[in-house]
Amino acid sequence: MTDQLREQIRHNLNQKETDELVRMWQKNDRNEWSDMAFEVIHDILKDRHAEIPPQNIHLDPEGKWLPNLNVEDLEWFRPELEKSYQLLAIARASGDSKKEGQYHLDLGTIFREMTLFGHAIKHFEQALVIFRKLGDRSQEANALARLGMVNFFLQRKTAIEFYEQALRLYREIGDRGAQASQLSNLGLFFASFTNDFEKAIEHYNQALVIYREMGNRNHEASTLNMLGTEYLHLRQMEQAIRCNEQIISISREIGDHHKEAKAFQNLGVICFQVSKYEHAIEYLIQAITIFREIDERDEQAMSLGDLGAVYFNLKQFGKAVECLQKKVDILAETGDVDLDIALKELESYQKAARKKWWQFGL
Image (cartoon, rainbow, N blue to C red; front, side, top):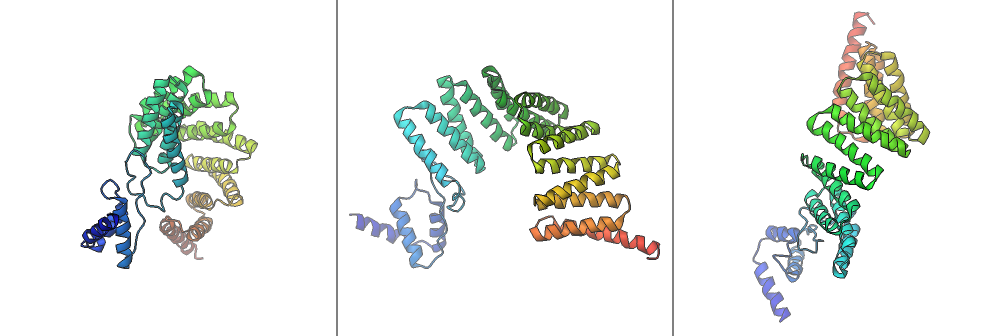
């Protein structure tokens, strides 16, 4: 009977064009076609010497397919997905609601990392329902916070509702670190969605107080960086400078050379904007030196471009050209997409230098 069915399926599918079979194979819709049908499609494509592409892969036990994902895309995430789905099934079968909720959170986080936000939301919402039924306020807050983050990524203003609900719960249960995290998320929301930089600063400052109380120097430095950015938006330059000076001090204390270099880079740009050119040059040279030492080529190129702009503004065209040439060399080595823009900028600097030389008869 099985052989007869297989032959019948092969007879029917053999009538289809190769391109159509390839599309069917790749779509991999097991709700429409049986496993045997896909085995037959594979055999037919192989017989026709057709290129057999990766299939979209189904890992959701609820019968929903993951769109636009092939085996290569899932190579990194497959083990985590399979393990989490297996554990979810076990938790459901055993009636362990707490673990079931946790595995929904895990799956939502994986899908968020894969930028499959619809799937992430589905799992976070299921986790939220479970933890509310259990009265687990800590995990309820975690689910709300993650829903807020996904909605933020999707540029939905509903993110603020989830963030504020999560913050309220974290305050009730006394989770200081989570409070600070949500305050930072709210600060980013106000800066990104409403351009309310003062409200963003208000929330970042609240987060900063908590991180300092906790002695979390790394998060303190990151929050100072966000504060500095918002002070720049408000043209409060001295405040922005103080933030970055504090970042340098903290970064040296904790040995974070990247943060230290970024702060020097920020200070260089700020000083350039307020016409403190000598300070700008000093800070940018320090940033370039550190980025070179830690082999961050893209950041080194960016700082070289900033330094070139300072020299160009000072009409020191030779030094400006030298900086831009070094930037172009790095971008060419790394294959950066901004290479063409840098080349045009270099050309304009070279023209300015030649014009100066002609004026002085050099």
